[in-house]
Every structure is written in C-alpha cells, then in structure tokens.
Length: 345
Ligand SMILES: NC(=O)C1=CN([C@@H]2O[C@H](COP(=O)(O)OP(=O)(O)OC[C@H]3O[C@@H](n4cnc5c(N)ncnc54)[C@H](OP(=O)(O)O)[C@@H]3O)[C@@H](O)[C@H]2O)C=CC1
Ligand SMILES: CC[C@](O)(C(C)=O)C(=O)O
Image 1 (tube, protein in one colour):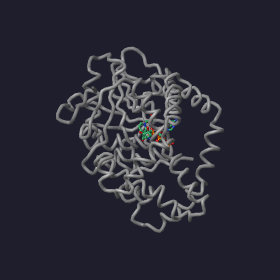
Image 2 (cartoon, rainbow, N blue to C red):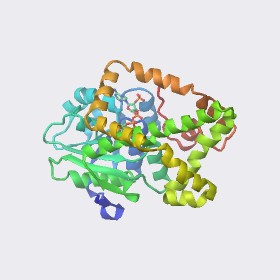
Image 3 (cartoon, rainbow, N blue to C red):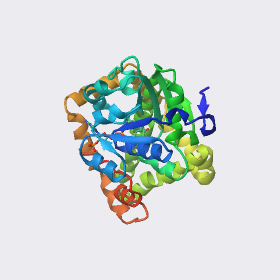
Image 4 (spheres, rainbow, N blue to C red):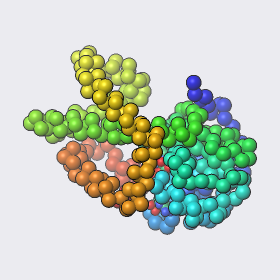
C-alpha cells in the first residue's frame, strides 16, 4: 500500500524563509509558480527571454535568466521540457547551484535515465502532479488540488522529505493526495499511462471510432460529437464517481453495450501490446528513441505533429467548437483568467 499524505499531515515549515526558483514557465511552470505564491512561498522564475519570460513578468513574478535564478534559490524546480533539461542543467544550473540547495523535478525521466546527474551535497526530490499543468492551476484556484507523486532520490541535508511534502502541499496536491514513490516507479508508470491509456491509447480509440463511422457514410459532425465531444462528459462522471457513477448515469442499453463490447475491443492482444510498451519503457528503449529523436532535431516528431493537426476529426472539431462559445478556447481562457498559454510550434 502506498503511503498517502494529505494537507493536515504536512507542514509548510520546510519552505519558510526559503526561495523557490521555478525554472520554465510553461504548462507546469506557471501552475507551480502561481500556486506556490498563493501558498505564501517566496517564488521567483528562471527562464530564457521570450514568450514565457514576458508572461511570467506580466503575472507579477521577479523573472531572471536561469543561472541568476538558480544562484538565489534554496529550491530549484526544473520545469523545462524533459528533452531540454540535460543541456540547460549542465550549462546554466549545475555551476550555480548553492551547496545544500534542493534540485526538484516534476517527472523522473532525466534522473532515472541518467541524463541529469546531480552532485553529492544537494537534495534531489520530485513532486509530480498527476494532471496537466493548466489543470494544476485551475483546480487549485477553484479551491481543489491535483494529486501528486513525491519521491526523494538524494537526501543530503536530512530535510529532503519534509521539503518535498511541503512543496507538494504548496502546489495544492495535499488537498487531493500526495503518494510516496520512487523516481523509477513514477517514470515508468507515467510514460506507460500517457502512451497506453491517457494520450496514445485514447487518441487512437477516438480516431478509430470517428473513422469507422465516417467510412461507413455517417456525417463527420455526428461522428465528432459521438466519439470526441461526449467523451469529456463521460469522463467527468468517472472523475467524480468512478466507473460506477458513469454507469449509473448512462442508459442500461449503453451499460449492456459497455459490458459486452469493451472486452472485445481491449482484448488479450491489446493487453499483450500494452505489456510490450511497458517492457520497452522499463528497458530504456523508449527513452533512447526519444533522446535520439531530439538529438536529430525531431524529424519524425515534427512530421507526425503536422499530420495529426490536419486529421478530419480535428478539422470538423475546430469548426463545431467555434459554434459553442461557452467552451472556452485555450486563448480565451488565458485572457479571462490571466493564465499562461504556452505556444507549441
Ligand atoms: N505538461 C504537463 O502537464 C506535465 C509535465 N510534467 C513535467 O514537467 C516538466 C515541464 O514540462 P511542461 O510544463 O510540459 O513544459 P512546457 O513545454 O510547457 O514548458 C517549457 C518551458 O520551458 C521554457 N524553456 C524551453 N527551453 C528553454 C531553455 N533552453 N532555457 C530556458 N527556458 C526554456 C519554455 O520557454 P519558452 O516560452 O521560451 O519556450 C517554457 O517556459 C517536464 O519534466 C514534464 O515531464 C509532469 C506532469 C505533467
Ligand atoms: C498525461 C500526460 C502527462 O503525463 C501528464 C499531464 O500527466 C504529461 O507528461 O504531460
């Protein structure tokens, strides 16, 4: 059984009189920085000059280049894209880390796969929210929290655990659940979840459903609402009350179809493929491929990203969402709530 901490188990004392430098002001960065500040933690931002730098300044933070932020920090939370972290770490972080400072991560990839090797004498911990950064901020601002996994890789000061837990509480995770884990467990389960279920598995399921309906001659708009739009409404029920609450709300006809069709689709062959994906993650095969893809300037990633944006389901979806002004686009939400939208190429 996991050890789970909640707000009432955790003290913020370990962060008192400390400066946290949030490095990167993208999806996770803006959320951590704003939640920490709202929790009374002295927070500065370190990022290169550009859109994020400007946004962090507009959001009222003292913003510095990475090296200057690190020089001032007791806790350095590394929220750059995983693939950029090793180079920035070597050039702009390691030479400026204070002895006894803490180096923190929101995902274990670079520590687990040895792309970042911290010196002895610093604490190394992780607080990995189990949710997208924009929701880490949105849920916190609404009074809730996104659960997080916490781990300590190196405890040089003897204070790494109270610090990690205090950090988790300050970003709102203690309102939901803070689970203790290891860098290895977080890295492998996170990569598996995003590939097999949350992002890869789900996108492929949605697209396959949309294609099946449109190839059979049904209208793309009908297929979009059936296979993508309604998914959010169904998943909201699962989030609130598990599978049982979703099944309580849907018709008995739908529930009967769920029981019968689900296992035919996600059958032993699919589970065998999931196990293969997990093995590739555990053996470092996925990590190696992703590192090499980045070293060669992302030729495959960029081609796939371009192709995916022009899929028929995306084209019809953009048009239909324009007619539903109550669904805020990322840009509208940012304008209304003053939150950052990090543009991706
Ligand atoms: N996205 C998520 O919801 C989740 C992410 N994580 C983890 O959080 C970490 C951050 O990921 P994420 O928030 O997605 O990252 P983003 O891509 O959203 O943000 C990247 C930020 O880093 C800045 N940046 C990029 N390159 C450099 C550089 N060379 N020097 C200085 N700043 C730079 C960007 O600035 P600019 O505007 O100039 O490009 C931007 O502010 C990762 O470890 C990830 O695995 C964990 C859980 C969920
Ligand atoms: C599901 C994707 C994720 O793992 C996340 C939001 O938790 C990520 O790395 O972005």
